[in-house]
Length: 499
Image (cartoon, rainbow, N blue to C red; front, side, top):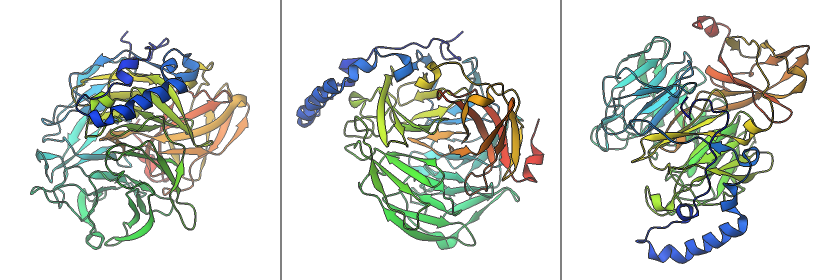
């Protein structure tokens, strides 16, 4: 079986000190800085990470050839990954995490490179915009349904978009915002794909110039929070409106930093800027006056990296470059790092073998591993097994419902009920350009019974927008189960679950 397919003994490559501390000869003014970094890294024991036990630092599979770099990648409700490359765009592929098999996927019908994408409440991947030519967008959009295996085309958007952000709203509709139009001009007006009509509705009173692919999340108040330098709420009711929330502490980090909502209402912005920084900021939108504050810094600066929410609520950072420039491979970060929200600190993990920078992607997989793929010039993929997969037997989900509804309790049968410490949900990921626009994490309340757990679904769609999610059980050793895919929604919407 291919090494990417559910490995039981993943490869643990040794750290390549030369590549980890390598630098571009053209960047002579930075050599002293990099030499100092190498000394500091030695004192921190970074090269030794590659020789540590997997239970401490995790393990990476060997790279697998993937035909094209995975510039866009989404975890589908059927457990497969849909990905597509750049420039030519409309040549998508499927990758099966269970077997590592690559197969052709249907074509969307237009160039979906540099599009935005997010899942609607029915589990369809809504892809908005794409590329006419470099820096010029298109109005086309397409929806991929994993259950039928087909793309459908809805009415075009009101604005062409290249580099837009898509966000699944509490209604289950999908917001598309920002990007460049067919004249390469910035699009200031947001619009929403309405499931009920299959058409796009503009928010004309919410006109605002935003960075490309702005990092955005649904907040507990139902508004969309934008983690830009000047952070704002977008109210999508009516014709739309903006309000200012706070200003980030480290300026310039909209330039290919990555962000996550690691708990409902709690957002972290990681790295970014040019030259890159290692600083990280957090904001708690549940407070009456939210403000950004610094949390623990990463071991090295990163930009063009990916951040992935894990089943236990920790945040994994992979890839990126520490050098000045849009995609500087000599400054590659091979070591993964993990952030613990309980301590605010980062821990170094095992290094991957291939640089994952501009045009790379990363996704949490249904078995708890993490896919790291793509990057310009790197048509391959590696899979990371986090340390929690080496800390003992995994708890098992015997049965769980295929659908759950807000506020309601549901039963999960497991022979490990007495040893379960957490029950969590993570939304299906949909990643591109250093950001996963689909991922979400929420811990659920539960009670223990004999051979089962009684679990309570999230209270409302503001805390966790509707759609397909991965349900996890995590035991007292911190080991997650293999997930179960469930559809979260209102009592009415979940009755449409497809078997």
